[in-house]
Length: 105
Image (cartoon, rainbow, N blue to C red; front, top):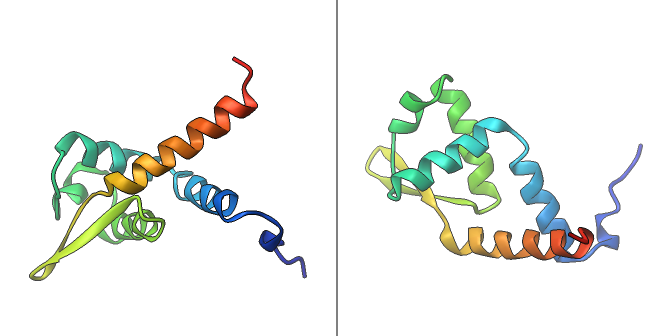
């Protein structure tokens, strides 16, 4: 059995790899774009805007929430989702630094 050797890497690299993995599905990118355009927390509207079943959308939301890119605030029987601006800014800075280091553009 092959074990991941993430302990040999820094917390920042592990966090960035986890973010990249969470962003590796087009539905998750679309969810972030929708939340950004709405500029407010939204609840069930996401399911109406995506060509997917509610359970599938929920799984994608769960993954984005797991890495902190979105927040899910419970309002009665519903969960309303919005972007976590602090985490997004931290991710933007981290990936900008990465690409400016590896790209000599």
